[in-house]
Length: 109
Image: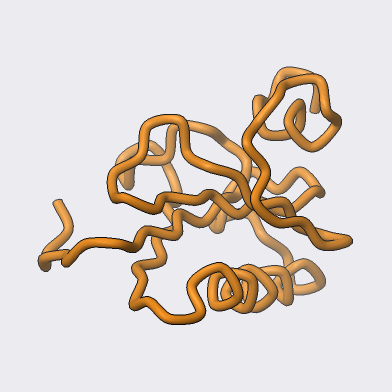
C-alpha cells in the first residue's frame, strides 16, 4: 500500500535502521524507543493488523517470534502486538514490538 509507512520501509522509499531481514520479514529500530532495545518486526506483505491476518498468513507470527529470539539471544524480552486503535495500534501494518534491556512491570499500561 503506497500510503502505509511500513510498506514504504519495505520498498526502500523510507529509510529505517534495519537490524535483520528474512525473505518475509524486516526488523528495524523503533524511532521512539520504550526500552534500551526496541525493535519492530514487520512482515514484508501488507497485513493491516492481527485482527485481519488470515489462516494462510498466520505462520508469519511464529516467524516473527523466532526472529525476536535471534535478536535477543542472551536477554529476556517482551513481545507486544497491538491490534486496533483502542489497543494502541497507530500504524496499520501488522508489527511486533520487541523490547529488552530493562525490567518490565505488569500490567503494561
